[in-house]
Amino acid sequence: MDVEQTLPMMPGQRLARGVARALRALDFVTVEELVPVPGLRVDLMALGPKGEVWVIECKSGRADFRSDQKWQNYLEWCDRFFWAVDGQFPTQLLPEGTGLILADAYDAEIVRMGPEVPLAGARRRVVVQKFARQAALRLQGFRDPGVGAFTL
Picture 1 (cartoon, rainbow, N blue to C red):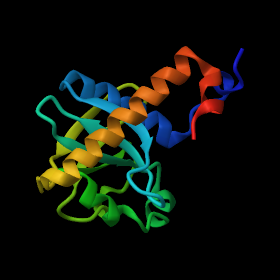
Picture 2: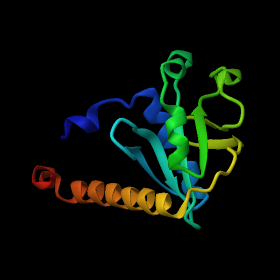
Picture 3: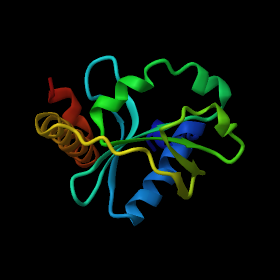
Picture 4: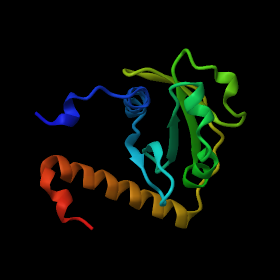
């Protein structure tokens, strides 16, 4: 058995799973821990049926939120930005003008839509290409776990 399969999920990973499930019901597909540019790693990026790009940052508690100094840099890589938190999170800490998703490991609900700021066409092309390549690489890794040794 693979070691990764036996490790318990971290709180943020549980939130990401619940959000991904809820977004799938809205016809969005997701990729976890996507790196749009070196130095930035979004918890969850979602691609909608009309090409919409959403970024969701999963925060497991006050300390996790307070330690996040990069979230504003994610705004230029999406059409909408959301925080995903559990029902115990003090949501008054979250900045105005951002989306809010309440989640657990099994489901989620969009409480507040993030404002829509459409990506420029050239940026959208880059983001969708990164999304597609990352999704394909992960699928290929499941199909052939040794393939990672052959990538640059």
